Length: 258
Image (cartoon, rainbow, N blue to C red; front, side, top):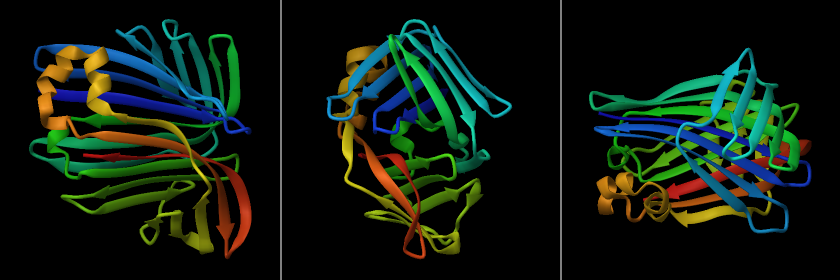
């Protein structure tokens, strides 16, 4: 049996300083492993990453408020939701499921990371995956989120074995919207999301990281994920309506390729 439960949380401050957190629990046959990580990217400085193995933290969302406490990583965070949650079963077949929840598509967030206090607009999601990674129905994933006090845009795009897109604006699925090289077009009421010049948060070969921290898992994966590359970025972003800027903020977005 393969089951991965993964939490993702983030925050971007007004100056573009970004915080990204992960907490994951994996069951795979006899393997039982948990890990958490933080990525802290100051504007103008290389990002700093920390990893902790073992289930040492607590995490959850209740009544529109998210929290994460992890003493091993020195993290204490709170996310107060400002947009309704969204949910989508992205894929289901006899061999497994990809079940995704955007629990807090936009939130006012405060994170204490060691001696550093961060405040800004954030985001929280949860993913349950029971397909093994090499069984996924795509070979390119595009994901992103834009979060401000007024608006929340979240997008997921697949290419490869299947071609699918899901885009939400303020809690509503937008079937006529589409991903573009510069952001998102075709949102309701003439709204377009326009990404500005990005700054890299992380660009890496994923199997190298798994090997460094989870060798038992890496040995099971072997070469099947050897080409998996992740590129995560943060961009200043504008929301336009009929060509006029109506909101500005930050987007975190990524592309993952096999």
